[in-house]
Length: 82
Image (cartoon, rainbow, N blue to C red; front, side):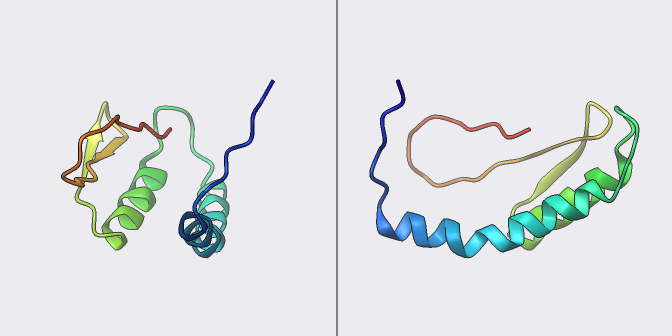
């Protein structure tokens, strides 16, 4: 059973504001068909978007992987996006 959680209005507003850009990025990435393990153009596009967000990306992690740290100064769990 899934229980619903009430989200803060400011979080909902932030997600709604970011959604169109996230959808556009997803569509851009799907326009770059590359074989698994050789996603060079895809990695470059992701690094470009991270830089636009003000995050310093480390590229070439495991060849085409990218990592970026969002430092908030607050304790808490980490999130990994794939």
